[in-house]
Structures are given as C-alpha cells and as structure tokens.
Image (cartoon, rainbow, N blue to C red; front, side):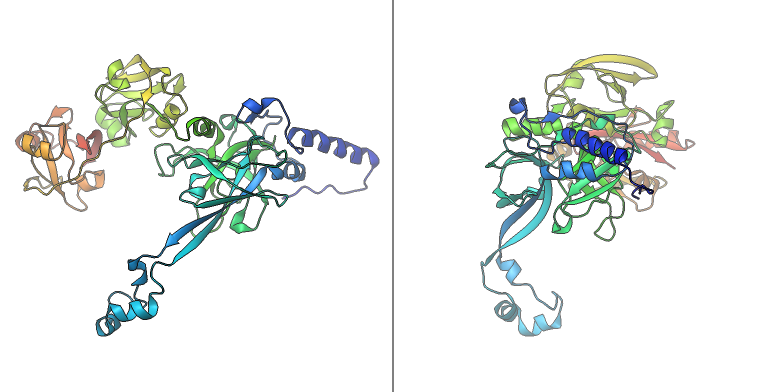
Length: 498
C-alpha cells in the first residue's frame, strides 16, 4: 500500500522532503510540549489537510509514537472454596459419585485461599505535561496495580483519576520526572467517511505498533449502551490496542480505540473508536470530580420501525419517538408528551433514536436547549433546561394467574388490579398484564414480553382484559396494531403485525 517513488534521486527532491518532514514534525509534538496551556487539560490541534493519504506515514508515526503509552495492569485474585472444588472430570461425572467431592478437593483443589495475580495489557495516550493519560475503562477496571511504559522505556506507576463505565473511558495520571510529549486532540465531528487515519498501540503486548486505514463509517451503534456513537475503521486494531489513539493525517487524536468485531479474536478489518468530541466532555469531568454527571432530558425514546410509522401515520422514520415522559422531569415540565417525535435537538437534526442520548451527553447540566417535535403531524418547539440524570427504577416480574384472550396474537393476560400494581411497584393501576407469550406468535415476534402491561392499543385505553378483547376484536381486519405498554416502569410503543 506504500507509494514508492522510482527514478534517479536529485538534490532538490531530497531538500524538499527534508523541509516537509521538519514542517510535519513541528506540528506533531516531536519534542516535549512546553506551551503555555498548562492550565488546560489538553491542547486542541488544527486540521492541516482534508483526510487524504500521505505519501508515507513515517513522519506521522515518528512524531506521534512518543506520546502513546503501554498500560499494564495487575489484579489480585483470591481463590475461594468454590474454585478449589472444581471437578476436573465435570459435575456429572461418575467419578464424582464414586470418589466424592472431598477426594477432588484434596488432590485437585490446590491450597485454599491462595492469591494470584492476573495481568492485562492495553494502551493510552498522554494529553498534558502533568502526566494525564486517556485510556479505556475496561483496561484499568478493577486493577490493583497500573504501570505505564513510555516509548523510551521509562516506567511509572499510575493512579486512576476517574473512570466512566458507560462510555468506556478512563483518565489516569503518572508523576513524570521529565517533560512529556503530548497528543493534541482534534475534531471528530469534522471527520468524514473515507478519511485516512492512523492507529498506534500495544497489540498483544508487542509494544508500539502503527497501523493505517480509513474511516469506514461513523455513528455506529454496537448495542453496548445508550451512548454508542463509534467511529468504525479498517485500521488494524487488536487486543492490546484498547485505549490507544486514532489519529487523523494532521496528527490530532480523533478517537479512542475501544472495540473490535472479530470471530477469530484478532483483527478482521472492523475496529471501533470512541469519538474524541464525546471523550472531551467526559475526561474534563473526570479531572474535576473523578466521576461523570450527565445531563438528563427526562424521556424514554425508541426507534421508529416501519410498523410504527404506518401505525402512527408518520411520513418518515426519522426522529426519536417519545415512548414515555418522566413525571416532573425536564421534558415533562416543558410540555413534551408521550407519542411526540423529536426531530431536532439543540439546533441539530435527529435522524434516529440512538443519536439523541449522545447529543444530550455532549451538553453540561443546566444547558437550555430548543427541542422540535412532531405532534399529530404538526411541528411544535419547546425550550427545555437539562437537569442531572437520576437512576432508573427497575421492577421484577411476579407469578400470576392468567386468562387467555386472543389466540391469533399469542397473548395470555390478566387484569391489572390496584393490589397487583402495588405488589409490582407500578404507577399504572389499570390495564392488562401479559402473563404469557406464545413462542413464534405475532406478539412474540414483535417483542412483547411476560410482565409487560398493556395500557393502549391503537390509541384506545385498555382498562382491563375485557376492554383489550373488545379493541382487538374491533381491529381484526387491520394488518398491524399499535400497542403502548409499560415495561419496567417505563412505557414504549410496539407495533404487532398479524
């Protein structure tokens, strides 16, 4: 993939290459950073190109590698009684019946209470002279010891300043003896699919390794949480690269390498990085307080499926459907209602449900935002002041007697009584609670679950099993039905196709 320049070498070309190298080096912090930004946690970089592939990545690699570090962790694990009793022939082995557990504990269990260390390797990158380093939360989570190895061979113990499991980011710190090279942080939002990128890290513990590729996609959702917004790249990323930087061709960090898609355990050309624009807000909070305070809009949202689009009469599937509004939350106070479709947030278009949580996460608590929704086909605008996120409540299912109401739907339900609602800690006191869903039925295929409380069908209120039956019978000729259910204390819309 390298471009090779052929032909005779002339002095002018050599001088030009030398000057180009010096210019690039000056932009990439080849020498320790000694600027006046000591009060800032990081230095913002400037984009000097348009993402095109350079003739060689050598100058970039030389300039950037010193600020990339290896992160080694050790965790002390103490064997417990259960670990010592493992039967080498399996739990159902006839040897166990014959010899008994005491025999295997004595000869195969090992010393009781023995402690040992498990070790793991990852990567990170230095962002300021005081020794602050960004890495992944999963690299350092639960570690009893953290050691940072610089490219030159110097080792430093590190302490965790703060970490955030939801975004898989962590900020650690070393106490350097001398000046440190630092990485400049870029603008991940300005990158485009097809731009060239460079990944540097510590794959498989081999030490500093440089790989190059392009941005394959942006805004990837991996099902890892509400804040999925990954940059996808085909630059080789392997175990050990976690926490390392993804650079643009100007030498600015535009992502934190975090995950790979693989069936073999190694690189298959699909790697994922956390956008640096999201990381900036997180690490700033980690530096200040060691924890993350998130802004909260106070709605439960869901994706608009083709069935929901048809059932709600929407022109497009763009936007985030409000399935529930938290009472006395920011959205509720502003007037947002269940069934609204959020199409713009803080001046940005909301194309899909998974974009909105990230948009909210970028903003500090207390920010006033403008939210545009579609309500019954008409646009409405609201001013909402974001508040601090609170923990979500969860409820458990309970065993109940039931009554079968509709064979075609594959549902078994019973009346939701006030007593049952109190037992399940539900706000709803009316409705039909699902006590069974037949495998392979329309209800099962749509995602209805045991424990869901049906409160509306096709915008008609379900008071009890009798009213549910009436609504279902009145809509027998419809190809799909729009259910509104309460699940775990929150409401969501589900379209059931017959």
